[in-house]
Image (cartoon, rainbow, N blue to C red; front, side):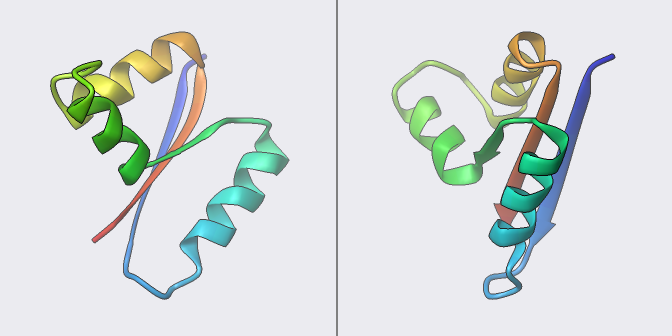
Amino acid sequence: MKLVITMSRRFGTGASIIASELSERLGVPVYDKAYIEEKINDHEYESEAEAIRRKALYHPRTLCFRYS
């Protein structure tokens, strides 16, 4: 089963702590928007959606979060 959890948040809500804790409990990697944007800038991915799809292929369980 492929599992991708996405979190949208506002600055200062502590979501990065929640994401880290959830990642640890579920045993899944965490990718934040800064990481994905860096990979897009390095031309590894063309879009955020492509990055998430590809990460889900290699890591069937993935947690992504971003600031809103």
